[in-house]
Image 1 (cartoon, rainbow, N blue to C red):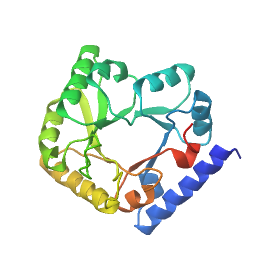
Image 2: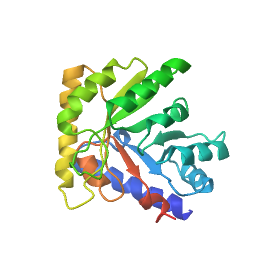
Image 3: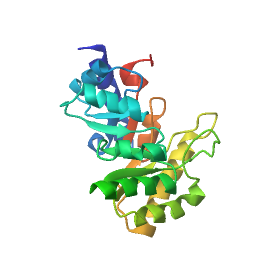
Length: 226
């Protein structure tokens, strides 16, 4: 086995153990391998190791890797923030945009998708810890943002995303809050909202215990960022 395939096996074992602890199935949870700053050959190794969902933070890096890996059977996730002036670069090029952090970027994606006759799958990013350094809508503003997303005719809004505290916050409380918010928004909007994208290398087991259905793991799979 290559180091990456060994890392993937370890992450999947930890994922399965965390799911088992809370009476869930590992099949309920999608593993997204975040490959930012690593070259296309690493992406190819990750996919060969059985992880078809690839996450990138920057639009230009994602597009460059897509070009280098044309024909590779994988699904691309944009997990970093998206500026409105780059909305046209991702519609039709990514399977899921994780970090819709406000109404204006949602409306920009909706407009571009409409112009191209396409649809865009998105998640609403919530700043669950309230840290000023992070993107995302405040929990108190999530209902208004949800209503705006529901009004976008070309967006498929599939759930919520958050990043755990970057400082000394209560990570479990943040994840628990997001799961509760998802239930509230599901009841309020009638949307299924099947995705809770929360949990990264340092906290994905805790996130699974609190209901995450999608984890974004970089360092534990690829090693330290180059």
